[in-house]
Length: 308
Image 1 (spheres, rainbow, N blue to C red):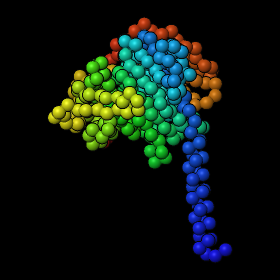
Image 2 (image 1 turned 90 degrees about the horizontal axis):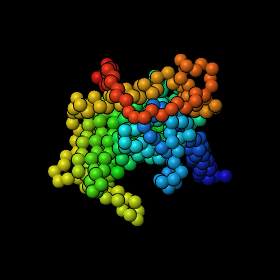
Image 3 (image 1 turned 90 degrees about the vertical axis):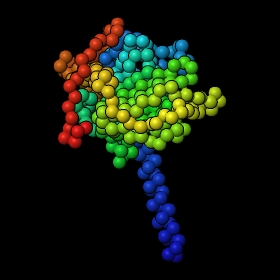
Image 4 (image 1 turned 135 degrees about the vertical axis):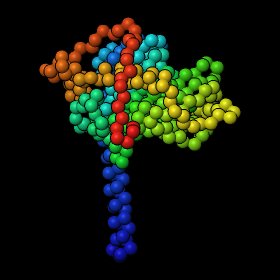
C-alpha cells in the first residue's frame, strides 16, 4: 500500500470511529422521567398524537407516567409542578397547555434531590412548548459543553435556557394576536423570535422582554408560524417591575414547597420519596388533588457574589 492510500485509510478510519462515537452518544440518550407534584385543581395529560377530547388521564400528586410526547393541560385555577429527572423543575400555571416535545438524558444518573441540586447529573436534551398560558422554570446548570440543551418554545419565539430561574407567558386573545413576556429572576436566557422577527436578545437577571399585540400567523398546510410585531415595537430588555418579580417568586415558592425533601430516581422502582414521612424506600401513594390554588408567600431571594 502506498503512502497516499495509507493516509486515506487512516483518515477514513478516524472519521468512522468519530462518527460511530457520536452515534453511540446519541443512541445512549433515553426518555427521561418526569414526576408531577403540587397538583392543584384539574390537571390532565395525554399523548400528543391522541385526540384532545379523549384518552386523557387525570394527573395527581406523584403521577410518574409523564414523558416526552405528552401534552399537559391545566384548567382555570389549576396548576402543577413537573420535576424532570435532570433536576429541572417547571411550575405550569392556570389555564395552560404544555407540549413535552423532547426529554432525553443519558442513563445511569443517580437519585437526586431537586430542591438542592445545582448541576444536572447527566447530559440531557429538553424541548418543551408552551401553547398557551404561563410557566416558571428552575433549571439546574446544564452541561452545555457535553451537548445538553433546554429550550422552551412558544408560537412567538423560543428561549434557550442555560441554568436559571425564569417565567414565560404566552396568551393568545383569540383574534390572531397574543401577549408574550419572558422574565428572568437569575441567570440569563436567550430569546429568539419566530421567523427572525428580531435579533436574539439576552435577558439577564431581573430583566424582561414584553411584547403586546403580536400577530401570529399559522400556515394551515405546513404549520409554519410567522409573527408580525406592531409598528415601532422595539424588542429590548427592560427592568422587571416589583409586581412581576413578586408574581414570579410566588410561583418559585410553590416549586420550593413541591420539591422539599423529595428524591427522584431515574430508574428502578423508586419514583418519589418524601423522606421525612417515608424512609423505607417504598413508593408513596398519590395524594388527593386539592380543589383549587392556594396563596403562597413569595420567598426571600438571595443573590450570589456576582449579583445573580
